[in-house]
Length: 207
Ligand code: ITT
Image (tube, rainbow, N blue to C red; front, side):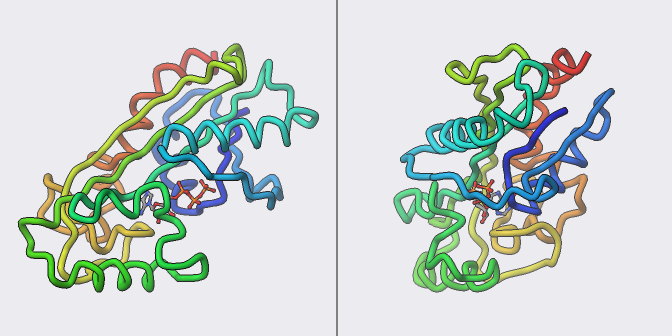
């Protein structure tokens, strides 16, 4: 079994649809397992946070699941806007306040950038995946990283995806991520690319 250590429904959907072709796939997430504990995310980098989440959930779940056999995956991701010194960065999920909805968070970021012209709105999404279990010790997890570059749009567009997708225009499509079909987003997104990187390893581990 693969335990995907996240509560984020957008991430869960994307992992599921990008790993669907794996043989013997049995992927469960924290929501399905009924786990409500939220891990600490106090790191300064996506790598640190992905490792923190991996350790927290490993400790929490190790008495319930045998990690000699089962695989644990954590993921930390976010949006870096270069003219804002890479904010929101590792704080992407909480930017502007814990309680904001995705839409409110997008409005908050657009307002912050209202005076910034298009040519200075460069940004990137980053995704870091950490893997342990089934032969990979928690002390030396496998870490994978991928990025996608683009710009922050002037207004929100599109209903697909989640988070900052309505205000991120990738360099490849002249549309926001939220205007893309699932398979289009997956083909260019930070998460789609990171999942491509982990797939050969998972294939071997699932034999
Ligand atoms: P877990 O820690 O449970 O995985 P989280 O939502 O707290 O869930 P992160 O700390 O990694 O996860 O925050 C990532 C945030 O970055 C996420 O909440 C979105 O706001 C944003 N984000 C990441 N990937 C995104 C994507 O593909 N499209 C839009 N926004 C994204």
